[in-house]
Length: 388
Image 1: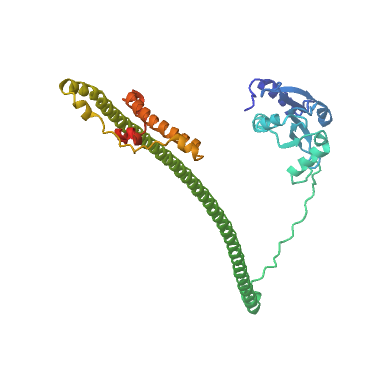
Image 2: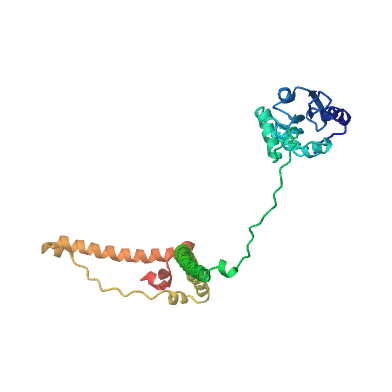
């Protein structure tokens, strides 16, 4: 930001004109800023020189002072501009005000020397006069001017014509250039040798890095292949287990289906056999029953038509063995009466039982209706066998 010198310009120039006037007792003027703004203002003036000016300098502000001094070396009046930057001033403020010095110098015409000061020591007379002496290289006194004049002697010369051949030694010159050429050749050889050595080292370093990178890459590839093989093995094992489980499930399911099929076929065969047995038993029972039911009716018809037909329908009589009765008295006389009597009784009883059994079978026929529960072997027996 630029400095504002127009607001207090008239007041500043009036005080500065007093410093410029040799007849005025004012020999210094001090300028500063209004607060934290960039407006330049008049801080004060005085006639006590640098000592009085140093008392008004503030170490926490940026200020500008113009002091009128007499140069001890030349006995001439000098206007010195002191650019005061206090040590305790903020750095930001220092940076902003550093660009204002040019505008201040442009307003204060006639300033010959600018001195930068940061503390009281740099604002003392010795420091300022030393800076003033550096700015003026000449040292003369205008007050003590001599009146006498020195005599001017004629000016002579020691000029001699230069002979290049005599001044320059050809052998020395040739030797010098030979040495220069040898040094240049040596330098080139050394440079070439150094470059070759650097290239060799770089080549070795490059090969070493390539070997390291190859080893790292091979290790990475091997690790990756091992990992892939492990994954493949795990996948193959999982697939094998899955196939085994699937085949086992299929086998179990197939066995279950076979078992169900065998059970179904066995059940069908059992039902079929049961139906066949039931049909066989029913047919045989019905035929036997119908035969025995129709037999009395036929007998009645035969009796009514022909009395002799009843005899022909009966089964033929059994032939009995000839029975010879034994006399009990004779048997007892021979000591065998008891045994003979018992045997005769048994024979008689057996004949009677046989007759009774034939009669009971005839009465019990036809058989009851629950005969269908008989086994197929019993059904296949001939009805005639029941009378045997």
